[in-house]
Image 1 (cartoon, protein in one colour):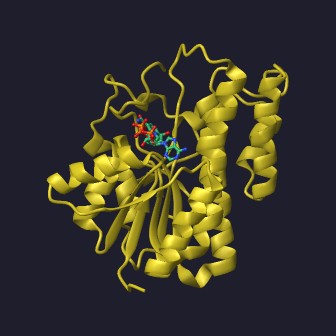
Image 2: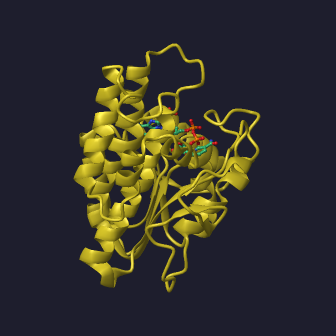
Length: 287
Ligand SMILES: NC(=O)c1ccc[n+]([C@@H]2O[C@H](COP(=O)([O-])OP(=O)(O)OC[C@H]3O[C@@H](n4cnc5c(N)ncnc54)[C@H](OP(=O)(O)O)[C@@H]3O)[C@@H](O)[C@H]2O)c1
């Protein structure tokens, strides 16, 4: 087993994930594992970085497939005895105007961005080594969704003591409510599926950080959610405000916090600063 440190990025064959791997290859003192759900796209991305003089490793990882997640877990255990840095970047978003029925959009987005990220955390957080870092890619759009939720839902989602099971129950209920066409009556916004799912990711991060502090406080693992801003990727589109290089600044900052850093931990970080749980219209196009 190698004593080399290791960082792993999900959904890294393109966009922000690929740019994060590129930067970590330069700045992280250890191995960097580029993962992708599609082996061919992942290996092509590795080749692209190799042509630039970087040397990431590759492992297949589909975050909606538990077998795939467990294969990565076993690979990390056997080769490195754990994991130092985890960047949960993989995500999807349906474009505005996509004709896919809303209920399907809600289910698919939830399965990937929230439940997939949670499954990766369930399997890989126990492997995170002392002084490790975990970064969950969320979005400021989550707060737009949160502000549109009923006061009762807001109270639950903002609660400092909500459990992971309660949060998963709420996220599953959102999908069910959408299938039954009652999401508005049940207190959810009906025009911001991506945002509802991302508030789930932010709330989940807060819960996971709390659990780490309670169960492994001495290990000083730092886990945070962040927003990269609006970035020019396939998801963000060509009109987005930020370049890839600008978009990765916050996630890479959180992935490379100094080993003696006491924080941030359990926070939502934007522009490398801890942000309040509120929507910041200045960073988004239509508000
Ligand atoms: N761009 C923005 O403005 C922005 C703003 C806020 C937050 N974010 C978040 O930042 C993250 C990266 O976004 P991006 O803009 O780089 O998007 P992107 O260019 O569309 O890339 C998304 C990546 O996630 C991968 N992915 C999707 N489903 C997956 C799965 N089941 N398992 C593993 N990988 C999967 C994609 O793989 P395939 O190529 O196989 O589809 C792709 O590599 C996302 O979580 C997104 O929500 C982006």
